[in-house]
Amino acid sequence: MRIPELRPIPASAYLQPTRTVARELLGCLLVRHLEGETLIARIVETEAYLAQDDPGCHAARGRTERNSVMFGPPGSLYVYLIYGMHLCMNLVTQPEGVPEAVLLRAAEPLAGIEAMRRRRGRHALKDLCSGPAKLAQAFGLTLADNGGDVTRGGFFVAPAPEPPESIAITTRIGLGEGCGEKMPLRYMIADSPWLSRPPRPDAPVIIEER
Image (tube, rainbow, N blue to C red):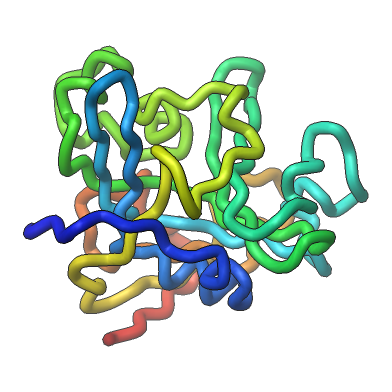
């Protein structure tokens, strides 16, 4: 894949409906300049989290210290800890005060691969970014990155050099019962080998062709 000149997607892109943002992030490039190296990965899997009628959203029960970044400006980076040991990264969408976001679940490593391997302690390419916690670790995220602005600076999302030919939409994964696990808010580049995991066997899958 030819990597074009890298420039951030503007904040206005994150003001689109969150489902649209989750879909249009597929194929885009996650870019980070860190410790003298440039890390690049192609986003292949996302999940949308909504402010209304979505029990899986962190803001479903209101604003807290943990989720306060979700209420901030579009294009903010929402980083949080799960299981007391792993980090996940989300991109905040919608105007300030509307707590919605897109979870970055998986990506295809393109550049800075040796640095990703060091951070992950893994060698195989498939093990570097094929899951939300793996992706965060490969890109060197810490809780200090929470609240960062991905529309400028050294950590951003660049437009897709090659939009995906087909997109699969299915239900989210990794959620407990009654937490919106049946909502079709998971978006993937269809048949990508870099996904975190395939759709659940009992889940409906919709394929959209470009």
